Image (tube, rainbow, N blue to C red):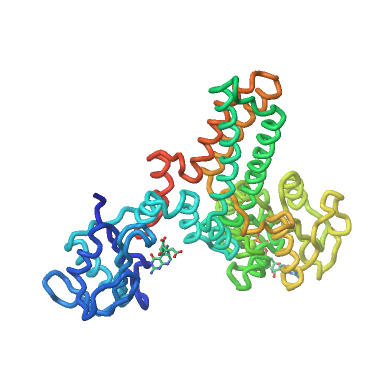
Length: 449
Ligand SMILES: Nc1nc2c(c(=O)[nH]1)N(C=O)[C@@H](CNc1ccc(C(=O)N[C@@H](CCC(=O)O)C(=O)O)cc1)CN2
Ligand SMILES: Nc1nc2c(ncn2[C@@H]2O[C@H](COP(=O)(O)OP(=O)(O)OP(=O)(O)O)[C@@H](O)[C@H]2O)c(=O)[nH]1
Ligand SMILES: [Mg+2]
C-alpha cells in the first residue's frame, strides 16, 4: 500500500493562508488525529475546526478540506488543512501530520501519483511544472493548453494512426491468404502525413521555447554610444549609470523585460574598444561573453558622427547574426546613418532618450523574437527537450519506414520501424515511460507539487 505523504502546498513564508496537503490511503485517519471539528469531515466540503498537535495543544483554527479517492487531484484520498499563513503555524501543522503518520513528500510526488493513478498523462504533468514556472501570460496559456491535453491528443492521434497501419499489417502477416496487404500507397501516405504533423511540432518547438524561457539579448557597441541610456529607456527606470565619460559601464548589468509576451533578459555591457586599462579590459571580456551567449544582439552606435573604427568593427562582427542596429543620437545629427552600409538597411535611427525610439526598438525585439507572428498558445506544442527528443526519435523511425517503402521492399518490413515510432511517441504521454524517464521529469518539481 502507498504511504500517505504530506507537504506544504503554498510558498514558504508569510501569507494570508497556508495550505498543508496530505494524500494517500491514511489521509483521513491521519487528519482525524490533528483536526477537531463539530461537524464530521465530508467529501469535498470545507469544515472549520481546530488544528492540534499530538499533545492536544491548539496550533491554529482553520479549515479542513477532505476529498475522497478517486475524484481528487492525485486520485488518492486527500485532506488539505488551510491554516493562517504563518510559517511557524504551517510548520507546526506539517509536523503534527508527520507525527500522526504521514511522511514528507518528495519533490513532485503529488503530481507523480496523479500520473500513476491516470489523472494526468506525462505531458500534462510537465505542463503543471511549466505553468508554475511561467513568467508571461503566453507561457501560462501554453502550459494550460497542454495541461488540458492538447499535446496528449496530438501525439495520441499520431500513435493511433501508426497503430492502425500496424494492425492491418499484422492481419495480413498472420492470415496472408484471407487478409490482403493494405495498399502500399495508402501506408506511404499515412506515414507521410503523420511525419508532417510531427515536423510541425518540431518547428514550433524553438519558438515555443522562446515564449516559455525567454530570450537573451545583449546591448553592445562602442563606449559612449548610449547603450545604458537605451537599457534605462527599455526598463522605464534609471537602472544603469549613464554619463558622458566613455567607459562608464564596467560590469555587465542584467535585467528582465517582457516584450510582446516574450520574457527578454537584457544584458547591458561595457563599450567595446581597444583598451589598456586593466579593469576596462575585464569588463570588455564580460561584454564579449554576453554577446556570445545572446540570441539577439542590439548594436548601438553613435549615428550623429561618422563611424569610427570601434563602431565599424562591431557592425562588421555582428553582421551574420540576428541583430538590431540603432544609430543613436539622431537628435545631434545623422552623419553615420546617412552613409550607412546597405547591409544595415533595416537599421533604426533615433535617440535613446526619445519614447518613439524606445518603442521602435521594443517592436524590433518583438519581431526578431517571434518572426513577426506570435505562436498561438492554445495549440498543442512540445514543452521540453525530453519531448522534442522523443519526437526526433519517432521521426527517425518514420524516415526508415519511408525508405523501406521507397525501395519497394516487402511491406511487412516497415512494421519494426512503426513499432519504434509508436514507442518513442509513447514516452511523451508516458504510455511507454520507464522509471528513469519519470525520475527525470519529476526531478524539476518542487516539494508539495
Ligand atoms: N486547494 C487546492 N487547489 C488546487 C489544487 C489542490 O490540490 N488544492 N490543485 C492541485 O493540483 C489544482 C487543481 N487540481 C485538481 C485536479 C483535479 C481535481 C478533482 O477533483 N478531480 C476529479 C473531478 C474532475 C471533474 O469533476 O472534472 C476527478 O479527477 O475525478 C481537483 C483538483 C489547482 N488548485
Ligand atoms: N544627445 C543625445 N545624447 C545621448 C543619447 N543617448 C545617450 N546620450 C548621452 O551619451 C552619453 C553616454 O550614454 P551612455 O548611455 O552612458 O552610453 P554607453 O554606451 O552606456 O557608454 P559606456 O557605458 O561608457 O560604454 C550620456 O551623456 C548620455 O546622456 C541620445 O540619443 N542623444
Ligand atoms: Mg554604459
